[in-house]
Image (cartoon, rainbow, N blue to C red; front, side):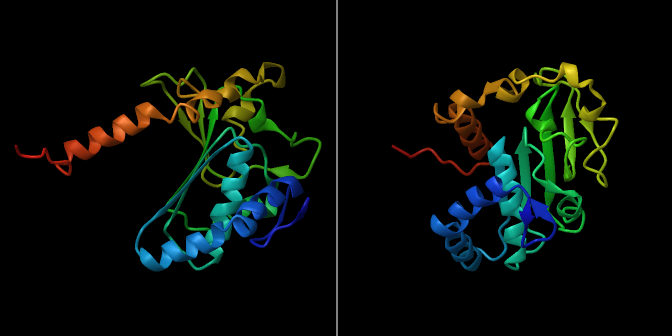
Length: 203
């Protein structure tokens, strides 16, 4: 692990991948531009798997630019990204919301092993101990400790699997993004119409 600007240490590969986007691909400049144009808007950051780790790094980095109390973070199947000091920064980051979603026995959410390393999960885990069908129950885990023993850490390691990592809320990540997230777009459009913001053109 290597030192992180927000505190603690993080996985070098995750940090290198994030910095490549933050610096080389212009994400930092884009965020600062949007911050100036929309000073009161929230920033929502989402990521799955390695993208979840990068999203966590992005969330803390963005708050370090001076954007306080306006960052929301949602990760899915995020591996352990940094050490306990890194994880503790999430407790004091004052995010609008921060959820680390875990699908049942997703093995990636338990890597690297906490028993064989200094890695430690950040808050707050939301655990679906089922197939994540509509209306299925979930457990909102500790908001103080990212390694809540009553949540997905309660599973026997022999039960962990990769299939649960590939599917969240009934959608296969390998196909969902490529398909253009059609149902999500439809849902958003329906929401706009329901709010009366989409008007039919008069003949």
